[in-house]
Length: 542
Ligand code: G16
Image 1 (cartoon, rainbow, N blue to C red):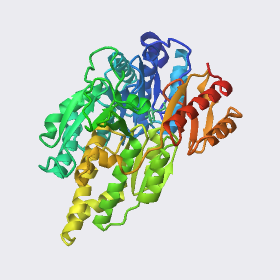
Image 2: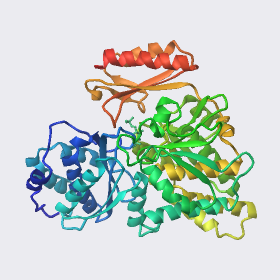
Image 3: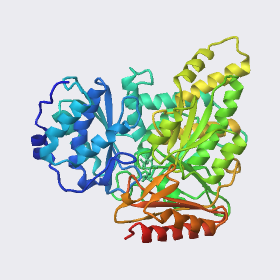
Image 4: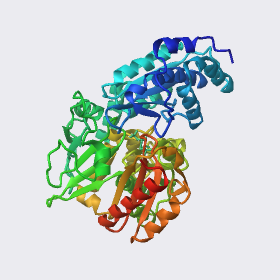
């Protein structure tokens, strides 16, 4: 370890002085706040990314400017570790300390990080930056860039890309392109080549029609989807809507995955074609939900739980066809619909685990399986394969002594692995995966919907004085504080058939979230409203 020899305090004070004393926490997906409050924080994250790169022996680190599903006036920043994973949790507290420090303490804090983490500050450092389409993103990306350069790192700004693309770029760069070519085109080529290998020239199959309506949330998803179309050729027809990424006030506004999931209705800006298969992605295209509106005008949502069950069920069949012995598991959060959990356990007979909200928790748990499928109900998820699985699949795909059926299944599985962005939930990769499974099964969206029936549910949010007074345990299913809240929820839940409800502090917005499900929509709505009242009374609602 060599002592840090830079004047961080002076340069921060000069270029991006701390504007306010609002305390901010590295939460579910990094720092999120109103964009006006973020310049100095993003600049400091440039410092932190450089330290992280040095800590990881000069590996490339990602820094993404996005507030994803949040309203357009918000923004955020998160760091990506060398293999495309979220920043290691042990560094979240470090990030929080650095973000909240006074300018004058930055030198001593950075020195302390270097000493405590045993960082060789003489090593070179490299950072990749990406940003979403928010009006504030360019400015904040510049602040991050300045932070990297001022602390002696080298930096590449990839401009407007999806969050999963940045995860991909970081991983591919740090694996010497073994994971795929380290460029935006490399990403598109990798996914499209895998998709075309699987689909061949077959356009439609049984009930499956290769036509899709795409809601781009007026964000980067619509830009990348347009760039992606030529790579996909004739394999699939995607009609793109909500592509007004240049118009102020449009991002996530009455559209996008979060709107569709939470409001349980179709987005604006997309035609209502009865029974057409539609997808909505969020502001940085790391989440996806499917939906359709039937001939009676009834809206049907196929969210992350549905995607997870579809993929896990299909992978299970495929593994059986390969004759190989892999353990497959599925990871959910408390938001997973009770019916989906029953279906996974009782019909698919796949082990299922429940963890707290946040992709980092799901991803971590999924690594305990040979093949881990993880999805949040909001549409954020992916599949990860252990190194052992990948090695076996690679070896077996050239094993000419396998019978034709087994060999075909192994080769198919190998192409599927290439289609999946294992680093993080990726709306575009997930969409191609779902399309692959539906196509293979010859299903239309109604066939998919018919696999099980969701319990009606409702999600609400409550503004409180301090969301951190709400503490939970048991993967957020039990509220331990403030006192009395869980008892009150339990009593209320008992009044409703198949009732279930929980509350938790959001990690991305200044609110407490309320989830409720019950046998009927009316009951789910009533239960959610009663739990909102409990939060207001006992947890400092304003
Ligand atoms: C982020 C996280 C997700 C989380 C979501 C909502 O998603 O990556 O894991 O489910 O926030 O979190 P919360 O309920 O704590 O506000 P995104 O798509 O906004 O990056």
